Structures are given as structure tokens and as C-alpha cells.
Length: 192
Image (cartoon, rainbow, N blue to C red):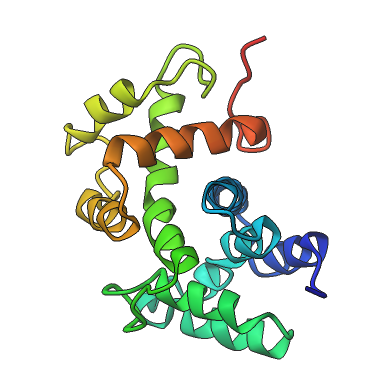
């Protein structure tokens, strides 16, 4: 693959100015790398898809139906691999895209995108403000409180776990573990 992670991060920062969006991209990238290794896939390719998946969000947020379409066009122009472009399109399936997730990479991106937000928000309301002591049980407790992180589509996450063929608890656990090494970059505290 000729596109480096550093080049992708520059592109993400070029199109996203809000630090929260950059942190989300980094969280999803970490999850994609984690699950790529679990599925014996290329973590660089999967990480790239995670990093650029919301490339166009700040530019299309007033017309969310265009989300993923603009990103796909930008990525095509920059020579990104077709698998990455398709995964970016597929992560918006049923919301802003009719591209159904088919490959393991596409299904994983679809599944972890929303879940990273719930995991981060759950960590931020804990005294430690850390992933180091965050448990699946804690996330599931917040999961059941529909007012907590109300923008997180829990049904979409459940659908994604089902598509991936894994239990929801295993998906949550994987996302927590994946994000731990980058929690400082995500604005979370690290327990020493």
C-alpha cells in the first residue's frame, strides 16, 4: 500500500478542524487495527479505513445525506485503495449510504464506529476518566440508559455485532482493549 498513515492523518486534519472529530478518527483507527489482527487481516489497510472513515463529516454535516459520498470522491482522487473507499461508503449503510457492508473490514467499521463514542463517553463520566479500569459491565449499564449518549444508535451496533458474528459483549470488550493504547491521544487519562 503506497499511502502512509501519516499522509492519511494529514488528510484527515485537512478536512477536520474539531479535535473531537480527530479523536474519533483515532479511536476508530485503533479499533480497526485491533480487529484486523484478530481476524488475521492487514492492520495497516484496516487502520487506514478507520482513520479516514469520517473524512467528509465537517464538510457535509449540514447535509448528512452526502456523508461518505464526498469522502469517497476525495479518497478516489487521492488514490486510496478501493477496499478502503468501499468500507468508508459501507459504514454509513442504512443511514446515508446504500452500500451494504459485505467484507469483514466493512462489517467491522460499521460496527465499531458508533460504539467508540459510547465507550469514550462512558469512560469520561467515571472518576478515573480512563479506559484502564473500564469494564464491559460498566458500558452495558450505560447502554441500558437511553438518555446516556442518546445519539449513539445501539440497534446499529447490535446489528453490526450480528453481522460480524460476535457477541455484543465481545465487541465492547474488543473496542475497550483497542482504545487503551491510544487513550491519551483520545483525551482520556491513563492510570499508572
